[in-house]
Length: 268
Image (cartoon, rainbow, N blue to C red):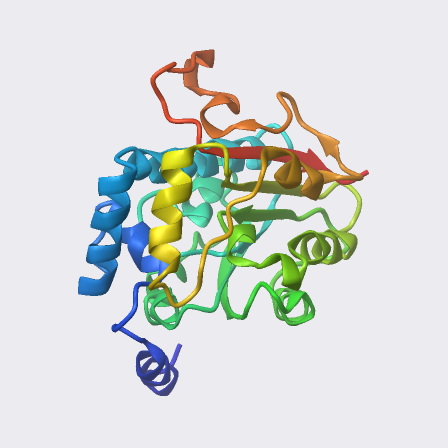
């Protein structure tokens, strides 16, 4: 990324309103956030104290699912939409630790993420990483850009963690997922997770966040999120609360908050 594109990205950063990627970064203990993000995060935590733990559980699902995809499933290409700000155990780090030749394309439209893309654009010599500045609502642009790095004749893992919730019902998130999956070859996978509307405290906290956010978050029912996997072969244990998807050691802590569901599925 050249200096001009970095400066252009900085010019697009709006620090006056909270942004989900920066609030998420704050929840995970990162430093790439601003006062409105901290205030929004603190309000969410006051209404739903377990939210920071939910954020960590989402990150842990990413790690477990990418390890499965790169390991047991043998996937060597990843399209990560809704990257967010770089933190520990990014997709390329997890995948390339298993298979150094893995190729990863990150997609996000937050200008601050673009500014920090230099931190993402590292790779093993055998593999590759790239960053695409694009909106999830524009799947054609995403697919066209990803094809510069990924071979669409070979299986690809599409990861969409906490990104479908950024899409309103009017913008048809299920249709967006289907258009992306339709372009993937047989043997590809979808890994997806999102927040559910089953916890009243979380619903209240997200409503408070949405009142001031640049982009609102849309909680959905577990059934609605499960419908994103229609037509695909779900990997065991199916669509389940995030802590329940292949937990380390096979044991789930019953005290963990159940405010998001996730799944991994294979395209026939």
